[in-house]
Length: 151
Image (cartoon, rainbow, N blue to C red):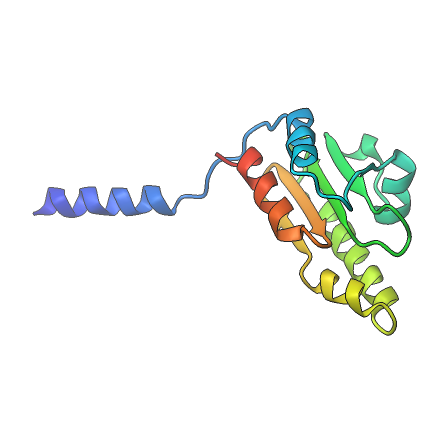
């Protein structure tokens, strides 16, 4: 009986364990997103976009996948950052939260469609990645990213 209980506890603990973060292939992830054909998420963000929107320079972080809003009234956006070794990601997460707060404040009184989309924005962090997804496909994008970065 004791062995059965121990085995059951080990099984439950293994099922509750979060999937381990893996080194995702950002090129493959970009292709998966392109194949899903999100019509409003097609603009590759530049270093200048990343600096302007998040106050982040690519040299400060590890790998970056950034799909930027197509125009100043769009809120469809995806930012995935692989952290450098030893980075805790809190600075990046705060930058993402600040971006979201600024956008919400910008659209709160006149961009009701954009504001409601921003209410559904997703920010996710694990020990290796930080991800921000906003817009029409925020939940689907985050699920796509999670399938690639956690296994």
